Amino acid sequence: RYFGGYADRATLLQAYRASSRYTVADYAEGLQLPVLLLPGAKDQLSSPQGRRRLLARLPQGRMETLRGTGHLVHYEKPAQLARAVRRFIAPLG
Image (cartoon, rainbow, N blue to C red):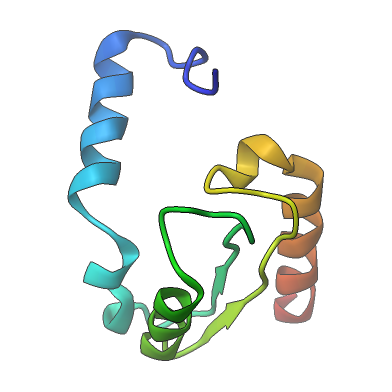
């Protein structure tokens, strides 16, 4: 449903491999910049406890949970996601 827009199968496979072999947790402590976590409230690939643990590892992290969404928030609720990003970057101006 969400993956039909890739340019070709090779690109889709490359994206799948990258997303399934690494997570932000592998790099969290090295991110020395503001980071916004935007998990979906119905995300079944993570838990609230895991999200809080990840947030604690991000030196400049902030989290905003998006209601009514699962793991693919950018597909499921793009406008809600965009508003959250705008709120995050506005003070960074």
